[in-house]
Image (cartoon, rainbow, N blue to C red):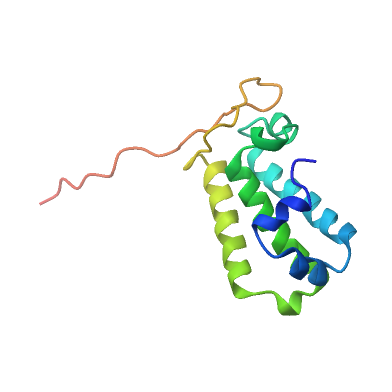
Length: 138
């Protein structure tokens, strides 16, 4: 798996996560949900199947960090949402906002393969707009 339970140590204390998540299976479910959420935002622009097939140091550190933060947020929601720290909510919202900006191509992720195959989706972002309206009246 792209993100493991051991990888969560970088984002929080394992004892705390185990006590909140209650079981390791809940933690695995939270990780799976986090990876699915990240993939839903990025799969239209980037080859997420190839990225999620990587292991160890070959993984993209930014995707790993975002997935880890979302997984920890999900662990709190699964185990005990009443003790969810406000900092985790803020980090989650910031990560989702960043994923949305990557999705609309206002930001990019270095090191990920762009989709070029039109059958897989490809990057087909089109910006609409035009020149600013002029005011020629006196």
